[in-house]
Amino acid sequence: AQTVTQSQPEMSVQEAETVTLSCTYDTSESNYYLFWYKQPPSRQMILVIRQEAYKQQNATENRFSVNFQKAAKSFSLKISDSQLGDTAMYFCAFWLNTPLVFGKGTRLSVIA
Amino acid sequence: GAGVSQSPSNKVTEKGKDVELRCDPISGHTALYWYRQRLGQGLEFLIYFQGNSAPDKSGLPSDRFSAERTGESVSTLTIQRTQQEDSAVYLCASSSPYLSTDTQYFGPGTRLTVL
Image 1 (cartoon, rainbow over the protein chains, first blue to last red):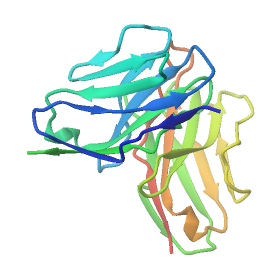
Image 2 (tube, chains in turn purple, orange; image 1 turned 90 degrees about the vertical axis):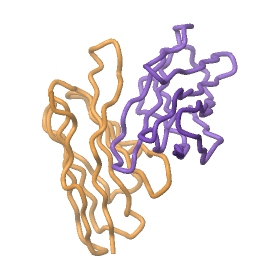
Image 3 (cartoon, rainbow over the protein chains, first blue to last red; image 1 turned 30 degrees about the vertical axis):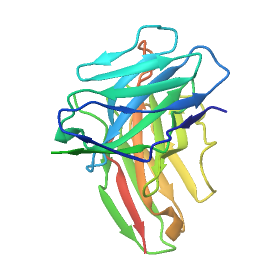
């Protein structure tokens, strides 16, 4: 069974700075998808970014980018120019023909 | 278009009562998922519907939990004889496997409190 580990329960960053959230996973498969979801206090899960494992190029979405290291089974999220609205729980998730498998999340606080 | 909607937004019930939670997926999405999120935790998979196939119930924690889905539309999650340990946010998500991605889009959740 796949597992997802987020080793940082909480992080904080100054507004306009850059922060990186870590995620590692375990699978024996070679083709799969990885996601980062954001959950603000409103509790709505919002897709931040997705990565197909067969693509070597790291996904980017505006201020959000990932560092996907397939051999190391690592999928970190970098948030550039952090904004107060980025304050939320961030969940890393794995998908392969099954329901999503989530990590326990990282609580990110952006400080003015 | 409209996103995934869930009702009620919040539900407070007494131990032992039955509750029904509703999910309206995005129109055209054939897959529907229910997850449970306990306070401060990640999401736990409960049940998965894909079109007219038999649902994947492997995540249901006990026989007090059940879910139904009418075709490719609304789903109802029912919890019978609720216990305090059932208190959590119940999230629904839908996706369309017929596209190149199976990205799941989530509803706002129902916060269930069992007194």
